[in-house]
Image (tube, rainbow, N blue to C red):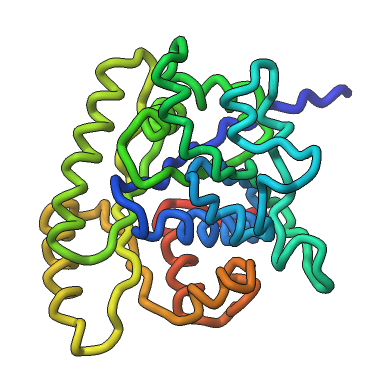
Length: 281
């Protein structure tokens, strides 16, 4: 009897905020590593011009890899397909002794050239569809696709929202940061109204870099209360502040491979479970 292999229908999640330094890349990398450990074939799309997700997953200088395409090539070079920019995620620097390939986790290599993406997209046809068109041919190969967005609400992010069906807003606890969520919600609603078939919705508010000592606790308590009052069940388990997070980035390893029993590692596991993912049998 011939078995017909059905195509995956992935969850496509945009990790976003309108400002940089809000924990988007850290969260994309560490949520992705947990998902891969769950047995889910996971792709991280590094669309941020800082390319932090690429660095964290082993590729310190993605633009300098000879013969290797990046997401910027896919955006700007006609005929370049997204799978040409996909590389295995690594635990450790590329080429270093002891570096390992992370099973089930893949990366669309980022590029510092993405700082010019807005300028390129301004004059492009169907500019808001840029990422959807790149993802459509390959998305059936993955269970989950995480898009690490830049810290803005420009054309790159609009393209990510059009391509996604879920959005997780990553923010630091504080009044200013929580106010910024309103703009993200407005942008999601605009995308749903303007683009037929676009169905992105906010599924989670992730507070990151949460203080764990009393001197900063008041800020956190106020931010947490405000988030819960405004977003209720959308509030995901928070990620506690930990020196292991920047250390893991410096060692180019996801937390799961750098500090397996650490608090922040545990927090990201809780986030993955709160998003409804289950370990595969």
